[in-house]
Image (cartoon, rainbow, N blue to C red):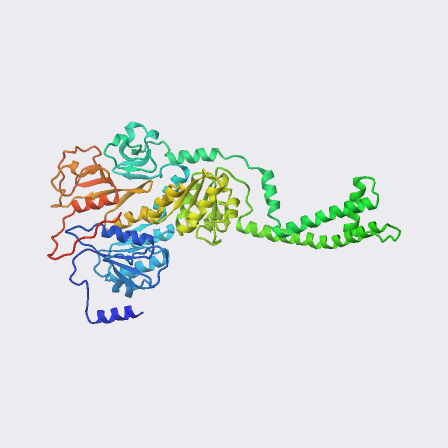
Length: 593
């Protein structure tokens, strides 16, 4: 711990590396993909006239194989295994513009939030929470804090991909309830704007210049169920009946191990041959007499008879010896069957054959949300996790969802979940390699199976799609990071709309006096492929959903837009008044998307 001692000495001497820095300062605490993407999103807001300083607090040892942000150029890194008041002060939290607590530990994040309150009570706080009860408690303690769940944001995208529909994104703004839908599923008068062209899955175009070409639109809700709900209803009705005979045969096969089964079959075969020979030697008249003699000799032993022929005596002795071996084998089969049955029931491997269901692999934060939403839609779900005490295991037992404990990369585990007959496989564990192995093994059972993968690396996802034809891949951190970054920047994201591997953000942006957009027409806001204007509201007036593009923007106006991350970043630069940068300032970093 040499670094903390050094920092303590420098702080005691009054040294502050950021004492004269007037740029916005944000502290991010986290060591996973979400923290990495939030830091990238914050740095992407930089421009030639606006710099951003980010301090990242991470454990001394890496806890994940993926990037955690400590290697990003220009980020100040503080190493600490515990988030306490001393660590937060060392990160320069006093006077910072915002703090993001992004660890996957709800209690630890709550403790860190209480410590941050002691350092700076006026701090803007963004906290990652999974447990809803803890999240509600934190909101009561910190009414102004943004308490967000990345799992809740990303789960609808995985659910929709599993059902072959759009993510069920609903939000209310300006007196209207809006949702993303396919143009064919809504009436023309309910369409608000076009979002994307998805006719070619390999080339999805978001926010096209020609809105009429978009087959995915933003529509106003009129009481009709969304596409995902309709797909779930059709799936629930299309379940085929179980096959009890196949279930019984699979149960019998699971009672004994392969070695014991082979030994029993070999011994029975030997007894059958010896019984036939014994019947021949005893001159049995028919097959019933031969069966009787064989069973008596094998199970109970026949009284010795010196008057029998030598061949009959030999067969009698051999059958008695086989009977001695058969009884222990029968005992072994019974004991092994009982033990295997108990283990199978405990691990969830003794399952009836299913069809038309959805298999969810990994019951972490995101897997638990996906399982719960599919269950709410009435879709039959089977869960797989190698940990019997996974986060979502109690919920699975409470909902009656079968949980198979095992490695999803093994064919035996996938067969136990009836993957060959399922509607879709959703693989959402935190290991990209395990996810891919499970997907490929499932495709070997059913080449036409719909597979939804959780992958962090976008380049890896594209290569997987090209090589194996698995195009439904999503990144939880990619979908959720913009909302966390926007909350840290005090820019509330109204909704996140996943479209393929893209994430569109719906947000309301205020226009500051003297900003580049102040005094320009509304038409200057829209940028094809980047930003689309949805509504305009002036101070004290209602939201106008059909504003004239020639209307001049004034300071204090609020623009409701749907945009990509890069487009929103550019819009924020044009709506904010930034003081001139001192001479000699370094060039800004380029946005990463």
